[in-house]
Amino acid sequence: MMKVVLFAMNGSYSHSNLAIRCLRPYLERGGFEVVLLENTLRDRTSHILERLYRERADIYGFSCYIWNLEQMLNLSHALHEILPHSKIVFGGPEVSFATERFDECSWIDAIVCGEGERAFAELCLMIRDNTAFSRIIVGTADSESVMKNEGILYRDGEECGNILYYESSRGCPYSCSYCLSSATHGVRCKSAEQTLADMEAFENLQVDCGIIKFVDRTFNMDVRRANGIWRGLLDSRFTKKYHFEVCATLLNEESFEIFSQFPHGKIQLEFGLQSTNPDTLAASSRHINPEKVIEAVRRIHAFGNIHVHLDLIAGLPYESYERFAKSFDDAYGCCDLLQLGFLKLLHGTEFRERMEEYGYRCLPNPPYTVLQSKWISYEELQRLSHIAEVLERFLESGKFVHTLFYLTPLIESPFRFWEGFSVFLKKHDTRPLQKISQPDAFRYFLNYAAQTLCQENDRALREMLATDFQAHENKNPPAFLRN
Image (cartoon, rainbow, N blue to C red; front, side, top):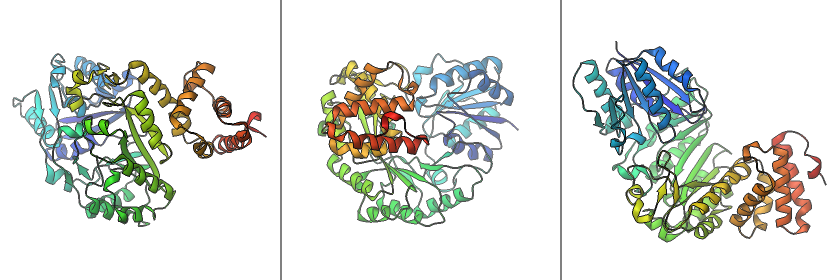
């Protein structure tokens, strides 16, 4: 029996790879022995290579994304040197477009573009039967099997991170100019009944599971189906945490009524706002009303039982540094987590094709992050990058929640507050943010906020910081926080 290794390299140990699990049942039905191997970017290359070599597989499939392509190229090349007769196949979103980039990578025997379940299994059969095959293989949709019969794809006892991924739909009804979903057409969905049956299967799965993350690009594109699933998850037999990417403007009153009933922390909702600039949204093919998005997100956040995540993207067309500051201020305070991301010019997207028109310059290799455009300079994007790092440490960490709840109504411009704090930190400590201790972080926050606000707020500020320190550090606050 021929052996196929499906290899994934995840961002951290908490993640797992859904793509290789999508391929596994097709290969097993074809009579192949299938081995799943998962590592992380932090693992030593020599250890990963040894692990791959020990399998001595006939075929190795590499699952490629923007965060791991360089490592996948290096590992596969080295593997070819020591196992020259094994076939090496690349697949995944990062290799599905502009395949000419890999013309000189002679050790790669084939590249599967697009949906790979059926295409990769057929390729493996051709390799087994010594049948000639093309180096570039374009996968085709297998809607009946992929979306209706495969279940949850995880198996009892297998090693995986505590974030498990689930696909209840494939495709997206929208065509955002920066997203790879715009390069494909058509949407297929599992029914609400089958999705809930799969959630019951997760309840019986014998693995450590912290959260089930739906990878659907727009989970509630069919609001009736989405409401049916959400209402079903209210049942106490569903005990996991669930994460959904949602379009705010598609929610209806039934959606809000269901959300209000969830136990605290049972679901998480992620919304893509990206910008409040109408010109920017139009250029990005995002036909949304930003005011309605913010209103819906604020309404859900006010329930107090759901973690709400809102995304902004810096570097989009027609958005200068100052206009991005307005988008930030418009969105601030309506959610638990305001994520400041940066535009990436992915192969296969409209923005990648219009680089010259928009004056885009980006990193030449993954993740292709924008460096400048006609509307925003490199220096300004770097300033936003430093602000994003500060937000990650002080806002996204959740370790200053009481302090920020107190401060938010007192801040005239949240963007200017965090911009100023970024400058303050660089002036007073040259270390990377992750090297700054928690006591120092609290002291810097106190000193900056105290000089930014009027003196009469100093006592309350110290009290809030002391509360946060004690809650998250599990010890008494330092002397400078005691009144």
